[in-house]
Each structure stands twice: as C-alpha cells, then as structure tokens.
Image (cartoon, rainbow, N blue to C red; front, side, top):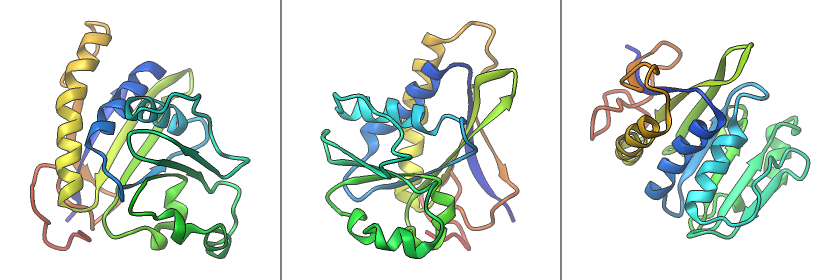
Amino acid sequence: MAQRVLSVVTFSAEETRIVGACLAPTLVPGDVISLTGELGAGKTVFVQGLATAAGVEERVTSPTFTLVHEYKARYPLVHLDIYRLDSFQEVIDLGFEELLDPNSILLIEWGEAIGPLLPRRHLEVELRTIDPEEPDQRKIVFRPRGPDWIRKVQEMRATAETLLDAASDAEVPRPRFVVSDDPFTRDHVDVNRDEDAPGATG
C-alpha cells in the first residue's frame, strides 16, 4: 500500500524560502535531507530559506560547479550537489562518508541519484514546477524516513501554515498543506503517525 506524504504548493520563490525556513528550527546535527526535482525546480531556493533561518549570513548559491559548500550556522551546514557526478564511486571518492558527519547537517541536491548511499533515516524533499508559464509556482512533497522526521515535518507544517497565510494572497487555496497517498513509493512512513508504519524503512 502506498504511504502517506505531505505536500504544499508555493506561488513564489519567497514562499518556497518560507517553507525551507520553517524546517530549519527542527534540524539537528546528523540530519540528512535529499532534495530532488528537475533543473530549475527550486532546490537551491528552498536551501536558501533553510540556511538563512539556520543562521547562515553569507549568500547561499548552488554548488553545482564546486560540488560542496560548507556554511557556518547554528550547526555546520554542508550543501552538496552531485548533478555533475556520474557514478556512486565518484560520490564516494568525493568523501561522501566524511560528509555524513554527525556534527553537521547535510543537504544533498539530486539526492535520488545516490539513494542506496543515503542513511536509513533521512528526509526526501521533492520540488517540481506545476506550470511552465508560472515558473515560481512549485509543488513541494515531503517524504519522511523515520519517526523523527515525521515529527519534524509536522512541526514545520504548523509554522509554515501560519507564515504562508500571512504572506500570500487571499485567493490562494487552503489548507496549504495536503496529506495524500504517494503512488511512487511503498516504503516511506506516514506523516500523520508518530511511529514506524508497517513495512517502512524507518
């Protein structure tokens, strides 16, 4: 049976940053977030909101060419982009095991490409555009792996609902966040539960 996931539609880059910012207070060292979605879907925009809320003062950009950016924040923040890497071995050679530092938070753009290398407990955040003529409209889907991530996503949702309502046009559909079945996966945990679902990866 498909598992349940949480999704939200944002209508501007600023709203995408708000959602990222609302996740930041829940994060602790050792957390890993995999960001997925096509080019231009808003992965770096989401990270910008998260990083600023986490205390990063410098400008946050995509590490597509440098592969890794490290930021000083409330906790060390490592931003990895593996778009230009062609194999698991290249990721390993980059020092991926060292980047999985229990003392820092790791954000991985194109993380779906290295799914088998990711820790059992992590958060997948998928961003995708909805309408080519409205590039700032995005659907963000949260797939938590493990009960800790369920709690964090629930906390993020509670804060983001309020901030998005304050920032958005009155005509925006509500509620902003929707819980639904995820037809693409069978091993994620339910965002409405506080314990592992049967068959979940944890």
